[in-house]
Length: 103
View 1: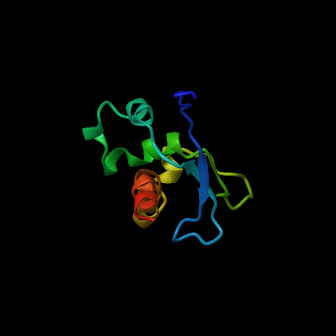
View 2 (view 1 turned 90 degrees about the horizontal axis):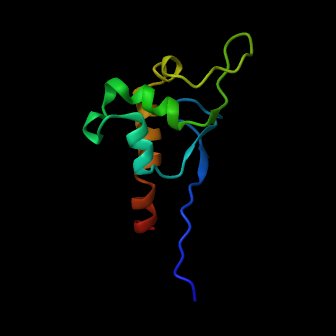
View 3 (view 1 turned 120 degrees about the vertical axis):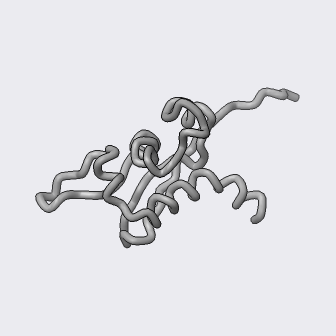
């Protein structure tokens, strides 16, 4: 019997509340490394840098401009999302473990 454990990180695709048919791919859970790589400390996480953090966490999406060019996943474009959608993304990543425990 082996006591070895493999660290793994999965992704999931979610639809944002204000953008029907949107597909945004995010990690199923954040690791401490995700936070450290994107902020100087957990205390630094706030509204002012959420666009920057999400731009590094979102791995794919289906947002396009008027000329049918896929929009880059960057702070400028994330800042255009409604706060409800930003909060939704954060909750999807941060609270996934809590939701599994309750279910």
